[in-house]
Length: 358
Length: 264
Image (cartoon, rainbow over all chains, first blue to last red; front, side, top):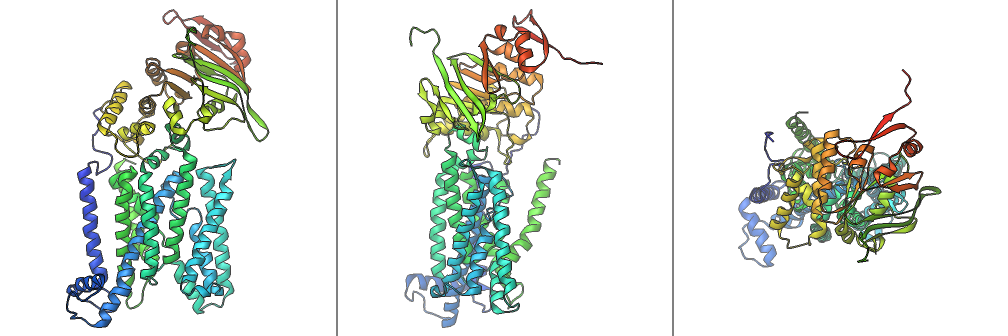
């Protein structure tokens, strides 16, 4: 009894939690402002608010004291891109949480079931062979989504034994499916002349990029994200119970088969859509849930909203870095998120180990 | 029913469970009377755990049925059966940490609605259960940092807050040292519930159980009181070990002393 009484997680009070969320919103706001001003054309901060208000209102609330091109760059390129970064970051984080619950493994990420390699194979095949070209810019998106769904269906089929899907089987099936699809992708790239534009596009896509962001794509992704987020918020209690393992969860009163099916469907659709607009951005879905969990705890009612904020903000900042670090060139955002995220993640792991005396 | 002194709480009828062609549980029928403490005893691999998992619905029987108070378990939703029976298994490895209070609160799942729960009352139920198992003051502690005995007591508390009239224990005290084994059995014995438990330690079974069900090779071997079941011939037949059995002068229960065939 005389053992230390420090709480398990730093934020065990609701007020602390709300302050944390508020802090993240403030950081997000500043990241948003920074992201709008930085880039190949510099914009003045004062103009930004006015341009946005004018665009939203659909008329000239403020007398334009800026160049026409400024407004176009801001409204049609930068802002959709920033919002896409947020949705992609939040969405990948949500999928990461879901996969971690599904596999009961904190090392799972949204791609654990082979979905990223499936999507890559789909997208690359569209880039390389040009079918679906009647869909224009959406060809790659559709290809990626189809690949994602195909890979997850294969993984599920492999992992189902006697009508039950177990966590270990799922992870193993995911590894096998990933290997298969990455072989297909590499074959397609290897088979095409090196140095061709197609190879460059494909490689760039596979490393993740937000440069193709548009209001249209953002709209689809946002609708999908909001729907998935709300559904998951209804299931938070069941997710908590599922962490204890399928057997325990079912004896406590959760219909685990139904719940797991819901998780798989939601995570697949959302990951598929996100991957199709941004390519595969690694690291976010793995580490943001982990980091947020170490701050607000395991309860999904608190974890899910907070980590959406953290994940979204993280990717907005990563996108800023990807645009400015080697300007006027652009780094793939996947490279940035891993490059800066990994050391931070390692630091957190070391820190939590030393706290436990390990 | 009223003329029966003891109502049957849990009833298993002709339960059969096989994986592919291998029969694990082969036509088991048994009754657990209301308010009794029934022990399931048998060697490793005899199908004890599989039988229990069929009862608490992790496995679905190939044939046969399980009834609680006459209602078929297979026809209940997970939530309904959670209100009828709570299950305590061996501590399983959880990768995600949470505090003891939250861990026990998860046992309230079947009682809670999606929105608008009286969390104050729920919290009181959890605290009362923690008091019951001697874990008061541990509410904020990390579950993963607890010792084996503390973890197991937390899981007992989680089973208690489920407030079911039937508690199934699947090897509840494995890996615990002897003090904790007796402590956990004492806590369970003092509850006003029906308990059906698999038990490894014959002396613990003799001490706490009103009825013993012996199992061998997927079938019921024999059923009776501890005094009737724990006799050298039956134990030899089940476990292949010679025993001396006396009556413990303090508890009045059978004392099983093993005489293994050891050559020095």
